Each structure stands twice: as structure tokens, then as C-alpha cells.
Length: 544
Ligand code: GLN
Image (cartoon, rainbow, N blue to C red):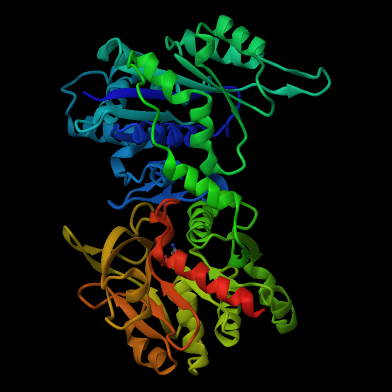
């Protein structure tokens, strides 16, 4: 039977619980255990799909088409275990299920309540599809003390009882702030947070203490005494230079050993962390660097492009170079000032137009595509970025009003709404003006690649599966015009109806993809398109 590790956070948010969970899972995996990480989000949205990146950062899409929290991206990048819909649940989804059941009459006249109905649903979610696992790590979003997270903490309390001794461990992540005026680290917030959690019936077994300074033995002992844990189970967690150094750092601080001990498992031999050593070595000692200009919209919100940032870093790892990302606000390029565009883009070794929604900044993105095409700078267009590359291509072929129906009615819909597509379950249909939540073409779909195409040689295959999240699609009606302008449709859906990849074989590196390759890239297995794009950027860096 799987064992459960519950991870809660206290004092403040943004303590890196997700990264801690991902790192611990990687360490357990390196010891030969089978792991899966799950995220409970206490908010009332059914999923983060309708939330703005300003609010919530990136929406991470799974193979099975779930729109999930960006922490699932960390989980997958650190463990290589593909996340599923069943790995992320929100209060909204739980209430929705319960209310639907209530309306069907499934509760047979009972009063429907938080305990037991909501807590039972949370417990069922935690235990769903876990037969083949050694450890299930469940991260609870938010901070202990939030009203919203109470049912989740209560469900953990019950599960700890239900499953019995040795089957669950509770880890609490807290902050030990340094107060400059006193010149001291303060343990009081941690004490209060643990007391709050204990008052809800959950005594933590391991404390992870995020701090800017080393946690001296005295402070560790003090936390242990007040919080009722062994001093060795107070794990200091200082900021790391790279997120990929975090597993090694937690291992040095004894996290994996303490968690196993808390389960009563003898830790045995040290885990094999060669994979992580190699990644950190490549990141710390790069042999060169390249600068990639990302022309997008949510520039003040680094989390909005989390997977993209990581995938570019992975491309750097593959080529042993440091990748500097310049976030360029597309709106800056909309002033029709060619000199300005040139001044900003000329130093770039590669230009990337990422996914996005809405018209704002689109003309700037098109200007970015044009610069890359005309100046032979490596270009990578992802989702909306591919659509912009096609609109740019059409305009240069004389289709002056080329646009997408996403931005409003147009005479030249080079990009239009997809209303039908094939899934494993048959044809999916959508209507204009339908619901926004969960109605995009989502998740993994297969694409066939042209035999002699650039992308087939990059992938080393003529059939791929990649994750999608879009509502609009390049209109094949314009294929002849675009091809006349040198844009090759090198990847199509298996039935040939939906364009998946376009490329310009006469350009040093110009690829647009309708899917999101960044979601599947891993530090120990960089995505081929990102590895190849950065390789092209390295070549470009030798020219400029
Ligand atoms: N807005 C575009 C669409 O819905 C692109 C989506 C994206 O970039 N993820 O098709």
C-alpha cells in the first residue's frame, strides 16, 4: 500500500513548498521508490484554466488535458512522472462534484456537510489510482490558518487516523526570518504556525525551515523543543543558486533520511544523485552564453511563462551554455518604429514568441517574427507565436488584412476558431460563444511530421505527441499562399486537417508549433526543439 506524505505551509505563502515536494520526490525516486505528487488547491475555481496569468502564473496542461497548477510542472520536471488530471484538485472541483451528486439525489435525503462529505471527497482524491506507488506526496496550497484550507487539513487529520501508524508523514514548511535590527533569526512564527496546525489535530513529523541565514544548532534545538519534533527533523532550507540544486541541498540537510525515519524505514544506502550532479555542474560551469528575446505580454509576471523559462534553461543545459532571457514587451514594438525594433532585437541570438491570448501586443509579436525572418535570426513560435508567424507570412504574400478571428471579425481569417477535432473519444465539437472554462483543445495529440522536414530530423521521428491548449488554428485554406512564401507545413494532425508545425527550411532556424513543447521538457531530458533552438542561437552568437 502506498504511504502518504502531507505537505503544508505556514507563516507566509511562496515558501517553495512545490519545489520542496518535487525535490523530495526526486530524492525518494533516486532511492528506487515509485512516487507521485498531488496538489490540493483550496480556491473555488474548478481549475486554474480561467485565471489570469497575473493572478496565478502559468496554467500547466497534462497529457490527459487537465488545466492545472504550475506546481505540477515542477513535479513533472523533477521526477519525469507525467502528471494527470487526478493529481490536482481544487475546492471548486470538489464542491462541483458534490453538488452535482446532491442534485441527482445520490445522498438519499441526507444533509450534505463539509464533514463527512467534503472531507471524504478529499480523502478519495488523495487515494485514487495509487496502487502501484510507494509514496504519494500531497501538497496543500495556501497557508495554515486560511479558512479555505480547513477541510483539507481536516481530511489529512482523518487520513492519518484511517491509515494508521507508519503510513503517513506530515511535513510543515515554515519561515525563520532574520531580523536585522536584532541581528537574530526568529523562531516564533514557526512555533505559532506549528501550534495552529497541531490545534487542527495534525502534529508535523518534519519541519522544513526556509531561511536566509544558516540555522545554528541552538535555534534548531529550540524549534524542535517547542514544536515537538526531533532536532534532526528540523531541516534548514536556504535559498539555492538554481532550482535544480535544491534536491542536492535537501539531501545534504538530511530531508530524505528524516522522512524515511519518520515512516520507520531504515534509509539504507545513499541515493544515486549523479543525474542532479551533472545538471548542476552544467548550470554552474557553462562554456558560453546566449541571449534569447521573448516577445510576449505578461512580462512583469515571471511565473506566467514558468515552463518556457525552464525549457530554455534545459536547452542551455543540453548545449552547455547559459541562456539569458530578455523579456520584451510586445507592445513596445507597436509604435511602427523600425529603428527601435532593430535596436532592441539586433543583440538577440534567438527570438521566441510564446503562447498567449488576446489582441494586445499582437502587432508587436508580428514585428518580432518579421525581424527574425528577414534578418535570419533563429525564431521559435509557440502556439499564438506560430499563429503570428503564419499571419506575418500571409501579409508578406500580399494578404494585407491577414488576422485571426480571436481578435474579432476579419475578411482574411488566416487563423480561425476550431469547432471540431478528433480525440480518443471521437469528435469534439465547440460552438462560437460557448463556455470559456475547459473548452479548448487540451492535452496530448499526435502529429505526423513530413519525412524530409527539419522538425523530423530534430525529433528523430516522424510521429510525435505534444500537449495543446488553444481554441484557434491556422486555416489550411491559406496553405498554398503561405507555402508560396516559403513556409512549409511540416507537421499535421493524423487526419491531415489541423496544422501542427510550420517551418522555413531556407532560414537558419524558423519553427512554429501549435502545441506547447515546453511542458514536456526536463533538465535531464531537454526537449529536442529547445535543445535545437539553443544550438542555433549558439551559432548565431558567433555571427553577431
Ligand atoms: N490564443 C490562441 C488560441 O486560443 C493561442 C493559445 C495559446 O497560445 N496557448 O488558439
